[in-house]
Length: 185
Image (cartoon, rainbow, N blue to C red):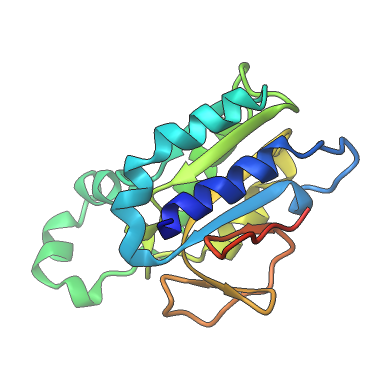
């Protein structure tokens, strides 16, 4: 069984577990953790994540952050300078603010309720421009059902490392990994 098949299997078990309505925002966040090299394979299998969610009688919404950086740069007044000297470029908090706005909007849509899964994909495109931990902390209060973060990185010892390169962060989210029979209720 491939690592993505195991991730899907572990996700299927997690999404079928009973959901408590009395959990904090932090506990409503699930991290589907996979090696960064598997990003394209996970994207290709996204319809299977959706199908498993619908089979478990939950709603599904996808928020794709892939185009956030290129759209932001293309509309930036100093884009020519950014392209001529990219080493001087810093997105500061502007990009993170846009990501937060997009995720909040997705979580607050009319068709999203306490039985829905909102999946965030495309985080790899934002590597080195923002911190995933900060994004999640800023949106956790608007999660009504569950927030599934497709996370290219690693999870070990309750620490998540984005793209296997940054210092890890300890977050209270539920990890779903591609480890054989790994599941945390």
